[in-house]
Length: 113
Image 1 (cartoon, rainbow, N blue to C red):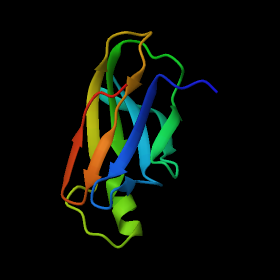
Image 2 (image 1 turned 135 degrees about the vertical axis):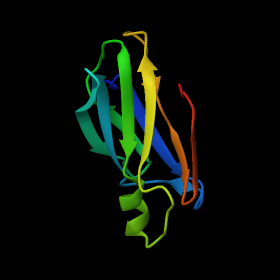
Image 3 (image 1 turned 90 degrees about the vertical axis):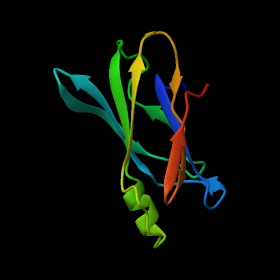
Image 4 (image 1 turned 180 degrees about the horizontal axis):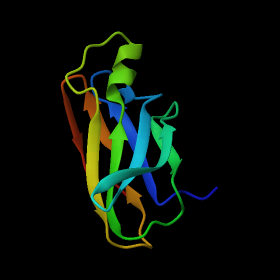
């Protein structure tokens, strides 16, 4: 199975477990507006291995995580109903892994491998 150019995983640091069922949208900045090019949801391990094509041209992209829906499913209040991570794709041959560490009132991210 091939892995798409952009992958992500979400860890719920409040529970110490992967965040399953988080809806995620991949968007590209095109002419000053965001255009959705793929969508998915995290699996039981909190991962999305197939999100978009195998290769993307250089540009500015965003992953939008519907964290409100995720927390609502467990009856947990959250300050961040959506987390959008904007990043640049420079190398069309490189793999970009963009993880999200999430709790109801904080989040962090980094470029993964």
